[in-house]
View 1 (tube, one colour):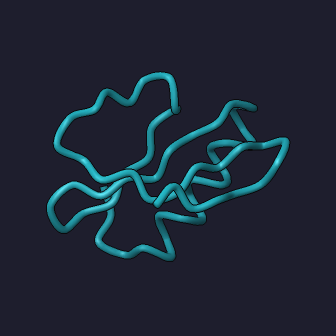
View 2 (cartoon, rainbow, N blue to C red):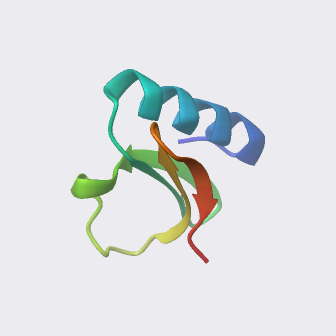
View 3 (cartoon, rainbow, N blue to C red):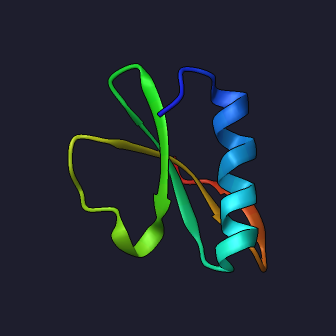
Length: 61
């Protein structure tokens, strides 16, 4: 988890390209995290961006 959105975005894009699968950048309380899109349950998190290694990033809101 990170408190820095810019750092979290860079890690999200890197993870998507490494795993070659879409990932979701989410916010939980005041921290940001990244998980593969198929592993993120609708828990107490706010999805911010989706990073797809084939299409790039897009806002989910």
